[in-house]
Image 1 (cartoon, rainbow, N blue to C red):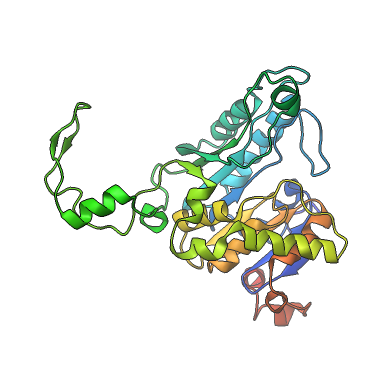
Image 2: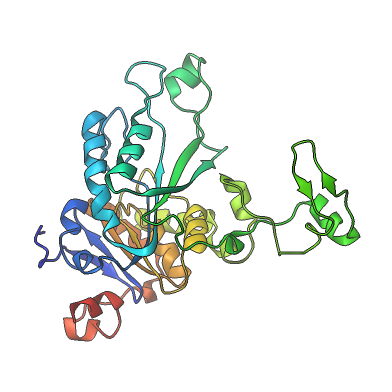
Length: 338
């Protein structure tokens, strides 16, 4: 592993559309191929190690150390983005050590990240997982003095106030009331108590679905038509866990939801765009990017998690080790060497 821009970090595996690298993100950002991707990445989609009270094996930092670390990464990440590119960070909640009090560290860290790179906050998205186990256990299930923590924040940021985005690609199915309205072709128009004026024909056009809200529920994501059906979490995660079991590899303990990755990849990118996950873990981002026809690059510090993430890909998609000359014909990253 090297921190020199002219060097490279180890490649765990490659497909025609992407590659999984093994190394600390700080080193990877200065090495090839990331050093050659500046200004070309359309979406950085990732879930950084959360600022937890206790350190985990997958590498989280704590306290002010975490704030400084993620703030320092912000301008380096932003330098990779295309002019209309986006960064989406999923950050969970944290609690003060030994007390039933939420920490403001996640919020302060995100604000520091945004300010350090002079990013526009395009939108905050809440992702609700009603099936999540009750936590923090001491305060929720033992002392019964707090509610279950069942959501995470996703912050969508960009160096431009108008990044590439199209909510028509992530429409949700119409509800029964809207279906009846479209069938009847009539509704009560006019001014509402809120002051909004509803036109006589404003809701009569069938757009193929409703605009997604910025509060996402995992059950809602599975109802989105099209590509989300083939990106269901059960299918992808069970295959990954089985692969880890067969190869005696430890599964990553904090895996990204596949349907959540599919939502933002569809919303913010087009086929053949470049997607980067600097904290790839089990490589949900790369696998879904591959499924949706996007180019991708992942970096994971722990080799056991990088190796296990092979299980998200069909064996025929994984490229056999080749000479650098032959690889240029099969993997887009090799073309960067030219």
